[in-house]
Length: 275
Length: 275
Image 1: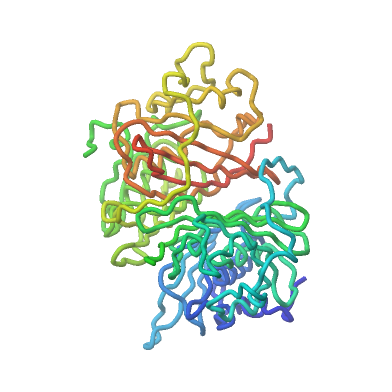
Image 2: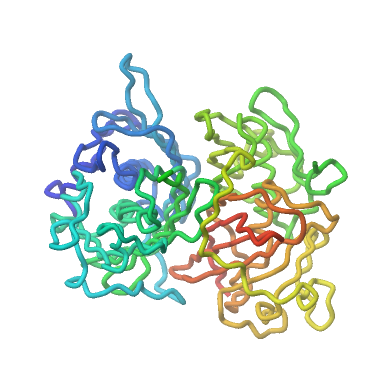
């Protein structure tokens, strides 16, 4: 059971203020330049919903990002939309405070929760784990000839080793393919669980870097399906963009665990950088 | 401009009752056996949101299906969550009435709307249109040796011609692959638009048929991205399931228009049939 010795658990903690309402503190430890990472925020909202709803795990969670979040106090307001036998549906909004104290909505989420541990064991999958070199042949922020630029607070909390074939952008030679692959873990060794997968699906550099576009890629909407409780050990993440058009792009993420199970699938719609 | 001579437009019409609230009548013409098609319902909700929000087109729309809808009266209650310059975010719920007149929520939706006609023309895509035989080599409900069983009201309103290689289920020989491909149009010739694409992404037989599972596949959540206004003419739809596990499966849909543009992408999480 993950506890408060984990940075992720400490920084996504929520405190019940009244039924369905939770106080939170957005940590500066999960920022990229000035922005708070969207996956970290989704995990925090997911934790509040897991407390408010009768079922523990996000089976499918859809987030629409409204305004940029900043480190500091926040409140999560949840609503139980429907409580069923095997699935419950809930809604949650993350608010922060304007200078005059009024609440400003940052993110709104709809989600259906269930119990992953109650599912049958059947698996019929044609999906294959991503082709990614062994971890020792992949590269992180501290690794020699290809240091990852724009180092941010979040990189200290993640243990990401990128597939060198998706790292061309870091040495000024993007591949032109909308692909990003990496080994993923939390830097303090905290093992993956359904909640941390919500961070994992949105924690790699954007695929637009490999398309030669180096600006900000703000998420409009992200939906994640958590399909299986992840086994302990390193995760593999593959992100693919197939269609950059009209100033928007999609990012499809898959997360595989150490037991070769597809544990999460996500897709987001993001604004493409102008660069 | 589509008008009331179109079955789709007539049956997805909404009438303003008061600001943000719309009356509707769910038509029995879009049912599969007893259930009202989820794509038809999404299009109806999408129409109400397009009226309520300052932008016309659903760029990304996420629907969580709560209880089964039935033909008859309904009300859509919308909320404008945020109105921005290029994107607006809204929420909508479809309710029907219990015997005592109380409202029962059927579907809840979060969506971000924009203006497809205001987007730049840039397209950088690696996605390829689905490999599907010419329309005259594909098969519809009325075609000879492989009639599609379980004929329902909705089949009369759609002009669907299925790729024979994804039609094994109709002759008792499912391929075992989670794939379904078809040419798609509306039977009365109404041309596609951003709203009708919300129907298109959820209108084919479920991929589970080709996996040899013949029961009901109820949608838990469906998110669709509308990426481009479709050109007139027939659409091609490809649906893929890669991971059937723990009693759930995902269905990924792509819709391509007659100008070879990827106009819509969607993914749903559904309960797998037990069969």
